[in-house]
Length: 245
Image (tube, rainbow, N blue to C red):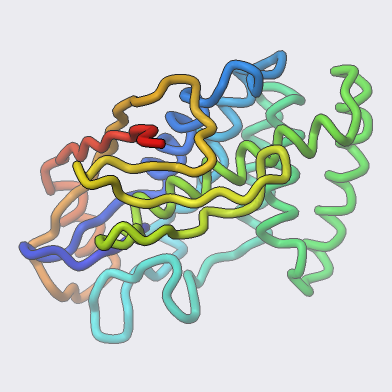
C-alpha cells in the first residue's frame, strides 16, 4: 500500500492501482516506442505489482497501529520468494512476452536477496528467458528497451501516487531509463505536470486513479484495517500532464 497523510485521515492507494496507473502512462508514450506485442507489454506493466497485498500473511500496521507505507523502514513482513513465484506463475498463464518483463522486474526487486532459493529461482527464470527471446525473435537489447519502459512508468506512477513532486516548480528526477535518457518531472504554473524530456505522443493528456480515505487513525489489527478499507468509499483523482516547453 501507498500511504499518505490527508486532512481527513489516511490516503490509501493500493499497489494494484499504482501499477494500473503505470500502464496508463505507458499507453500515452510516443508511437515509436510501441514495439510489437504492445498489448502484452502494457499487460506486463499493469500486472508488475500483482500479489503484493495479502492481509493474511503480511502486517500492514506500524508498531503504533497506523497504516504502514511500503517504503517505511523495515518494509512489509512478507515472504519474497512466495511473492516472486506467484507473480511469475501468473504471468506464465498469459504469455511468454509478459514473462520476460516480469522476470526482469523480479530480478530488479530481488536480485540482491541472499536467500538461496531466491537466487536459484532468479537464475532459472533468466535461463528460461533465453528460450522466450528466441521464441519471439528478439534479442537482449530489445528486452532491455522494453524493460526500460516498465521502469520509467513504474517510477513515474510511484512519484504521482506518493505525492513526491515539489510544489515550487523545482524538478524531481524520475530515473534514467527509456533510450538511456534521464527524465524529470515538475509542476507547471497551472498545476499540470511536465515531464522532461517530453516522451509522450500528445502534448497534453489526462489520467486518473482511485484512492480511499480512512478517517480512523489507529487500528487494533490487520483484520480491522482490512475491513475498514473494504467498507470505505472509492474516490477518483484526476491529473493532467502538459508539455509547456
